[in-house]
Structure formats: C-alpha cells, structure tokens
Amino acid sequence: MQGVAGPYWYAGAAVVQILCFGIIAVYIKVFFYFLMVIIFIVLLIFMFVTYCTSSKIGNIGVMYDNLTTVAKLDPVSGNRGGSYLTFWSIAGLKFGILQTVSCWGITIVDQAYWQSAIAARPSAAYKGYILGGLLWFGIPFGLATSLGLAVRALDLPLTIAEAGDGLVPPAAAVAVLGKFGAILIVIIILMAITSSGSAEMVSVSSLITYDIYKPYVRKHASGRELLLVSRLSVAFFGLVMALVSIIFYKANINLNFLYFLMATAICGAVPPLAASITWAKTSKFAAITSAIVGQLAGVAAWLVEAHIEFGELSTTTLQQIGPALTGGCFSLGISLILLVVLSFLFPQNYDWNNMKHISVFDDISKDKTAVAKEETIEALNNAEKKIWIWCIVLTAIFIFGWPLLALPAGVFPKGYFYFWVILSFVWGLVAAAVATTLPIIESRFIIYSVAASAFPCFPFLKRWAAREQHGLAKASHSQDSSSSDGLPEQDPKVAQFMQQSVVGIAEGPGDAQLASHVRMVSDHARSATLLSK
Image 1 (cartoon, rainbow, N blue to C red):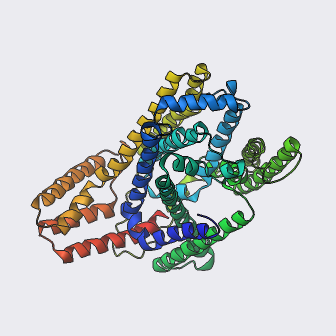
Image 2 (tube, rainbow, N blue to C red):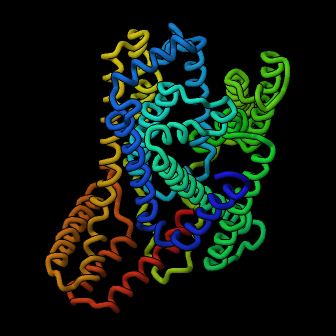
Image 3 (cartoon, rainbow, N blue to C red):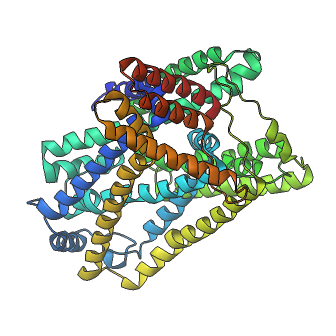
C-alpha cells in the first residue's frame, strides 16, 4: 500500500475492530481467533507452495542447490564458506543477541502483556504464555524458511532500501504465487497489524483511563464514565498511531530502522519494571532513575558506536547491527546496575500484602459476584516453581542448545537441510492445529449453549450442553476441595452464564431467550473489560 494512506487504513481498521467488535471479542475472542486462523492458513500456503508446487523451486533439493549457487556468486561476509546455510555466522550471532535483548523489552515494557497477565488467573496464565510462545515460533520459523530463503534462492533484485522497508516477503510471495501471493501478503499483514494494533489500543486506553483520568482528573468517576473515556482513548490513540506512521514515512525511517532502534529505546525500562514486582527493595527513586539514565546511556552508546564504526550519523548507519546491539546492551546493562545500586542505598522494602487492597471498578453490571475467589499462596508458589522450570528449560533449548547443536554441521549438507525444512513444516502444522482446535475445545460449552438456543429443533445440542455443564460443575467442585493443586478456578460470571444458559435450554428457549443470552454476554464483556484493567 503506497503513500500516506496505508497508515490510516491500518490504524482505522484496528479502531473499528475495537469500537465495533471489541465488546464481544474481549469475552469470547471470536474475532481474534479468526485472525489467528487466517494467519496460520496463509503461512501453510506459502510453505507448501514454495517447497511442493512452485514451478521456480518446488522441492527442498532445488532450494538447496540454488542457495549453494548464489552463495558462490555472492558470498555472505562473516559466514563460514560465505554460505547462507550455516550457523557459523558473526552477523547471525550479533542479531541473535540483539533479538534476545529486544524481546525483553517487547514483553516487559508492552502494556498489552501486563494487561493480559493481570486479567488471567496467576496459576493458569503462565500456561497460556508458554503455549502461545511455542505456537508463535512456528510463524517466523516457517516464513523465514520458505519466503526468506526463496528471495535468495531465486536471486530476486531487491535493493537494501527495499529490504529495509520490509519488502522481502512480498517479493518472494509474488515470485512463487504471482498476484495471489501479493493478496495473501496484504491479508496476513492486515490481520497481524489490526490484531496487535487493537491490543495496543486497549492497553493504552487502560493506562489513560486508570493511571491518568481516574487518579488525577476525576477520582470518583463512575464505571460508565470510565468506559466512555476508555473508548475515546482508543480512537485518540488510533489517530496518533496513524500520524506517527506518516511522520516516519515522510522522514524515510523504515521498518528496519525502527526494529534496530527498539532495544535502545525501551530496554532501559526492563530492569525496574521486572524488579518492581519481584524485589521488595526496589524503590520508586531507583526505578525511575535507572529507567531514564539507562535509556539515555543506550542512546549515547548507539550514536557513538555508529560514528566510530562508519564515520557518520545517518539513518543508514544507525540501523546497522553494531550500533543497535551496543545501544541495546548499554540501555539494559546500565539500567540494571543503577537499579541494584540505588535500591540497596535507598531501599523501599515494599509490603506485598498491600497489593491485596487494589481497587476494582465495576458498577456497570448489576451482578456483584464477579470478583473471583483469591488463589491460595500454595497455588501461587506451585505456579512460580513451574514457571522457573519452564523458563530455564526453554531458554537453554532455544538460546543455547539449538544453535550449539547446529554448529557441528558447519555448512549444512543437503540431508541436514532436508531435516531443517521438514522440522519447520512439522512445527507449523502442529502450531496451526493446536491454535485452531484448542480454543474450540475449551469453549465447547458456550458453543453448545448458543447453538442450542439458536436451533431448539435439535435436542442433542441440549444434551451436549447439559453434559458439559455437569462436567464443569464436577471439575469446579474438585478444585474447591483442594486448595493447593494450583488449578485455575472458574470465573463466577462465566459459571453464572453457563448455568442460566442450561436452565434456558431446558425450558426450550426461543428468539427472546437467545437475545437475553446475547445481552448477558455483552454486559459481562463490558464489566470484564473494566475488571481486567
């Protein structure tokens, strides 16, 4: 999409999604579910076409031979043998470190992650994050192995500027699929941007509503007033995103520049944010000072390294891997050192029991039983132990184990490359299957209930819904009888909705009953939005 119209369309799509569909999507995630399904479908299309049906590549052997030939004609500096098929890569190692540092900033500084984690039950939230991370890995792994390698294997005439603008996947998609490939790229970009953009809009609206408006503008604002402010904030932030995108576009700041700037710009806030919920000595002074000084140190190191390495400061030199890595490491490292020193010199010794008194704003729903029962300390400790185990194991595998196991292969022989591509296919297929079917399985009771209300002529739907309700009630009773098993308890509002749905189905509801259920879902979504924030 050329010109300044692109940012407005992408931001506008996300705003409309939130304002028009967000109320229902927040509760049942139907809209986001279909976005995810479309992304995985497009991913699998690209992978299978590239390696199975494309007339230009069509199989793994041709891809390997083409990459080997291109490496001889245009070897990669810093890679063993100049090959594209090796983990012995200086630039690859630098990028791996930069990506690891950047991801700390992406996850910890992003309000959308915090909001989702706080809204979920602690003993169950980590399962979703771990599973989501493993499933997400299949997307960049699959796209890079198919479209990413196809660009080099076909030796497409992309300039450095075009690659920096993010045109590598579109170029490969058009090469292997023609105009249909371009359409698929537009679809997957629109799905990804509207999904992530809408999540950021909701998270920013939460900050504006509960961290600015509520404490400093109207301390006694009602729930309906807060909901209105939240919606207005969504529209405002959507406009801001579009304007900032246009400024970047006019200033010739591309995606590559923004990506490499990310670690320098945000990683200074990682140590104080992480320590604020894990270390009681962390003080307000230490957190604020370390975040600001760390970011300033990162920016200074970023500029100095670019000038030393390339002799000038420009958008081209500042987006190179060396300056970006130096800036990100300084930002994170200086912030961490300063945080520890200042926290020991000026400790706060925060009492974690104060977190039990955090206010919950909800005067929209007439039902006041929405606050779920507090989880036991034993359950939280059990969840924490599991989190640490998963964290250490997965970090060892992805950051150290996988690359180290690939090093002995040197430049990949053809058999090893076959294994690599097949692994990407297996990962993508399993991720797509799990991401597509698991939400349906977990939401089967609500699906049965709504279907039974909409189609009362099918009595088997009533029996299915009643059977699922009996199973849920039995599981809930089992959880109540054990206080330290760490299993998540059912949201009381969801339980109430399920119970009323079954009662209504048993009475043979018609359109009026279905409308009542839909209104109840909508009311719950509005109040759940406030509770989650």
